[in-house]
Image (tube, rainbow, N blue to C red):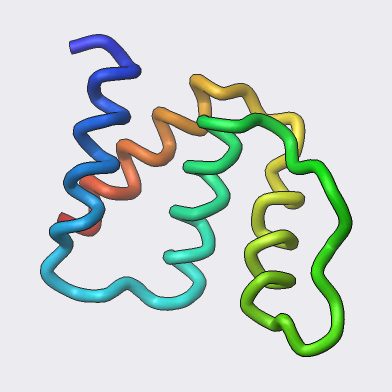
Length: 83
């Protein structure tokens, strides 16, 4: 199975995890997904009391510049470890 197909299967599997991952793991899942599908983050960091938005922004910003394929592979491995 090619990487894109494995990634798409992992995205589907991520919706069926038996236990809810910690917030730290959820942010990692989010950032890897966004970097793999959209590339580097754009726009301004949410401010004020948008703590969730700011945390997501920061997690994605942390992996800025990472290759799409590398993010896909890490996402696949992370979801497999949680399944």
